[in-house]
Image 1 (cartoon, rainbow, N blue to C red):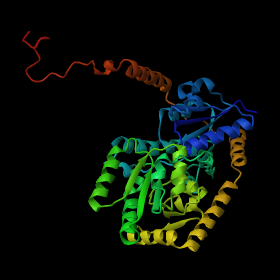
Image 2: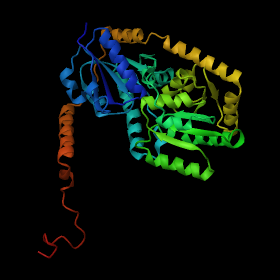
Image 3: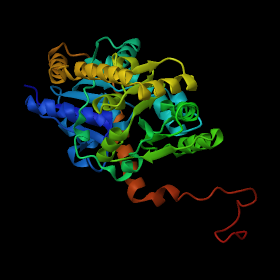
Image 4: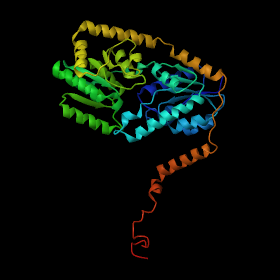
Length: 411
């Protein structure tokens, strides 16, 4: 048996889809007898004890090891993994096209562009490129990855199994219709389109309704402000931004929801759709990117963003018991198909293929790569512990100041 099958990624987040998959992969690998650690640049403080700093990865490296590299954005951890002699399998979680973040998050525009460009380099590095959906696998194939497959997301719903916390959600547990969206408040989710459809529903179909938007807006305060401005401009009432919530609070919001509404225009998979299926909430979702395959015949897909049409669909699902039951039955069947997949078996077969197949020639790495890595680490330490060192340069001299002494007088 090989020495180890480790995972490497930029960051391990709490409660997100990638984090759940990474932890699930580690459980399967360790149960199969592999040594397996999770190497990251950063991690949520609640998960930090489950990870190892990526700077320790070279010490754990060995040509007989396999690195499972989770690629969702370019990172320093990614480039270190690329340069090591270990075999590599890439799991692609999709990178949102940078144009979604223009005028909202300039840094993310740059990072997404660079990440998409960096992804193409790995086609000559990895033994296999795995998409966590057919949509993502197809993107790898289009980029020229010679060997691709799907390692499906099989959601683990244990985070929703605890006792729901109704401290906040209980305020909305009444005879009003609760329209729910769960996900980050970011531009590709098209929160404004969710609000537009809800506004039409409230105005033309059911004034006793509210919209609950559950998800973090961290780093996207500018977009959140734009959405608040949009709510004010169209006069939408009863729109509630709940922010980031705990797992127990999330379970409570699903418990009180009457319908889940998604208008996202770019998804690599979209785990909240499956969470809604699991919690028995009928789903209406825009048929874009990976969403139709994720829904797999469950819920209701809509193909036009006509607010009144979508509002009519919401009303039909809420008011027509037979339709609602049919939607929920189809969601249950889709979820059964997803959970019936042998995730562990597929993963171990891909690992075995990657470890025992012909080794790909390692692409060349710049001769001074590790010198640059060490220099970058040193600069990071200086920035962290001596930030004044980056502010100690003399002020730029203006015209007529060349001959002035320290006190400003002519020398």
